[in-house]
Image (cartoon, rainbow, N blue to C red; front, side, top):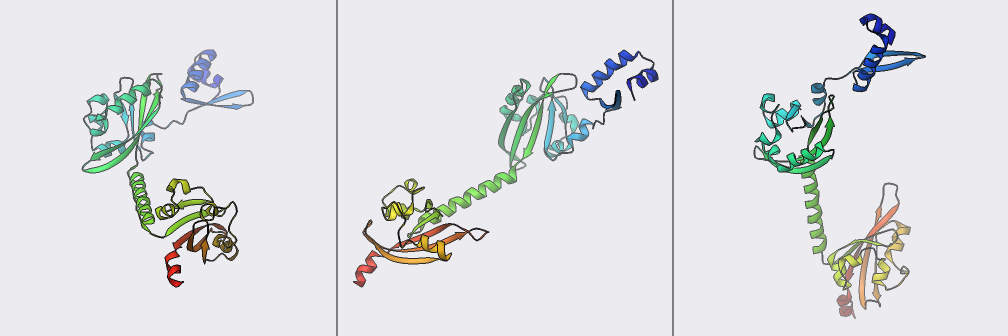
Length: 287
């Protein structure tokens, strides 16, 4: 309907109708579409807040300026195993559930009232189960202009457990890697060492972290250029594992070096894995 149509229908002055419509537009209760010089207004297609809160899998709660619960979604009620009347209208400090007993919840909610958005991650025990929750405290302004706070609580338990498993797997891999007595290094296609085990560093009388980023030929041959018989050079041509034996004067040791290429999905070599054995004693016995 146009402004004129609305004024005629409700029998109110056109200018008054225009002012009321401006207020409805600002508050989101009306929508405006322009057809040439005519302005046509429609009721806004607003979804009830209670319905919108239930669209998400997260747990959501709305608090007023006194940090009293105004609204919560069904997911949160089910998660906390409570009824709506058990929480609506009550201040956050009066809720005895463990999730709201954390002092940070109320402290951050107060800061959210002042316009500061905050996020925390906490571990909770619910029914003897450990849960990890990410809680966002979002400053909110309601239709009446009053400030409030929205809690968006996300269950990140599975993600945290996956991260812990990955950390444990990395720790176990590093323990195994460093327990191998042969010297092992992983390097990119530019001969820079990306990883090395403790045996590699001990053999060179270096700290492990000092080996990373160095060129392999700098450490093994003491040169600024790659070695003529380097297996890295050979596998870049053959794309197959290579093994060589030679006496390295820079170290004064006989070495056996096996190199295996690291090949990506496009068949290109991106690096290599080196296994170095000190065969000096074996060579002496052969002599």
